[in-house]
Length: 156
Image (cartoon, rainbow, N blue to C red; front, top):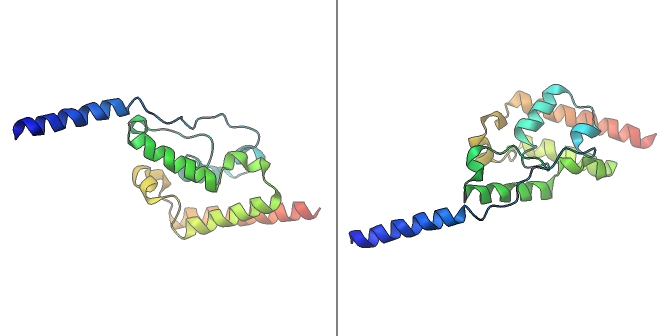
């Protein structure tokens, strides 16, 4: 019985080591002119909220922690990033038309207010991403203001 247990432990350890050689591509592109931080004038407090709670999964630049480089955590993180960017990629903000931007802002506020974003698994590890009611209000007020500005600019 001990021999079988020992063999299982060795196989699991070897499997873990081998898995480290199969890492997903990192999401660490440069911030371009299309990025929302370059396209819009965003108050500092909103920038902090976006950086702490949104941009790791919803842009082309992720701030990886040490354990994000260890499989299978790296695979889970990559999945979150790929899915997040499919829903909303703030690095491609400048490529969107004004109506898409307004929809994105509305959806961003709604997801944050409903507690769906940031994901619970992200908030568990990233304590700065745990948005207070005040921070949620700040983000939603800003998104509403920017929506109005975009609408006014599109009319002119």
